[in-house]
Image (cartoon, rainbow, N blue to C red; front, side, top):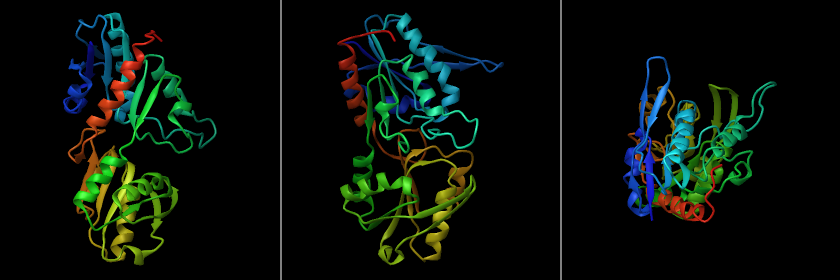
Amino acid sequence: MNRVLMPFPADAALAGTMNQAMQARIAPVAWRHFPDGESLVTLEESLAGADVAILASLRNADALALPLRFAARTAREFGARSVGLIAPYLGYMRQDTRFHPGEAVSTPLFAQFLEAAFDWLVTVDPHLHRVERLQSLYRIPTVHVSATPAVARWIAETVPDAVLIGPDSESEQWVADIAALSGMPYQVLAKERHGDYDVRVSLPDPAAVAGRTPVLIDDIVSSGHTILETLAHLRRLSLPSPLLVAIHPVFAGDAYARLQEAGLARIVSTDTISHPSNAIALGADLAAAASTLMTASTDSPEDP
């Protein structure tokens, strides 16, 4: 068995939690930038016959897109038998419809871009809203790893009196499953969005959360505006300071700092994106999924 796990620099720590379970050696991707904005990836050359998994969380998908393609093609040039992608956070999943005339529907376009270079894909809880299944986007084998069991275990062990709160209807699919596994009650807030930065929310049954510790759960926390509005509403109900659990801690701009200042008791995330808030490990789950696809890909290796 000749397996190689090749993390991009930001994902080196996550790779260290995965390689033993994958029975893979780690060969980091070196990635440097030039003054003109171009970049260069460098791989080790001893990849003849290897099954390669490139590890890159796509929080900055635009910056990583070309380097990913360059790394995948270079691995094949050096003799890799198969090349897959582990993208714990998969970017461009929210651009799945045309909101205004003339806009690109980027979700399927990005899928085509990735599948042109990789034999398979593993990701964690992609933002499936209008797209029902990841397999309907990709023609290569894919595995959608669920963070729900790990998040539910963490909540049950850490916040035994929790009431789970989803900030909007899109979060209900995660909140309901986590509530079922953790044995906690939950509610989903009603949300009205009046613009990118104008979001208003309300709690359906305030009495149901009395005496419990609120735990806000969302799959992607980016700008943080929905969470901030949710906090303002909970504050009016005189509830204890809530915790925030994010599956994907995107935290665009100064969102993390503003959330820290907003009165949250704690901000916790999974390690799909490297961040100081990481407290819920998914490396073992990612390794198991990748191992399955690496084994399958060796049955019919083919350069796409």
